[in-house]
Image 1 (cartoon, rainbow, N blue to C red):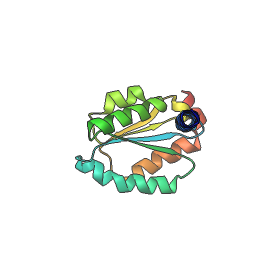
Image 2: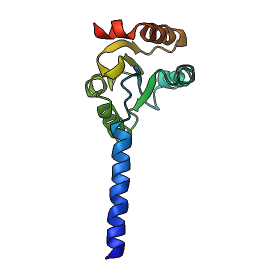
Image 3: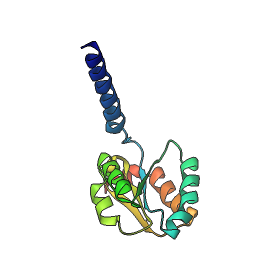
Length: 141
């Protein structure tokens, strides 16, 4: 009986920690940089180092999310992640258009910029800098 109760408590703690981590994943203060990608996509692979550099340069100011559509499992995981961030519609609309990048206002209010197949880091920096400089005005429109 003791083992059963210990098991149940451990399971509840594990589920609780998992839920808490997911429930508070989206920081309403930061814009989102969402990439929809696949392993078989050549342009997606060229975009990876660009996104990595952007993550390093904008750490703490932009939340980066990658949604992978390479397999049934990764699509399901990406669908769940998109749902956690309120990006269901963006994901469903763009999951077959690769690579797709969306820069989304804090709180997921609206998609500020969308890019298809763009791998030029400066293009993203310009969009991110503009959003960070005046997100209150841009995101309230």
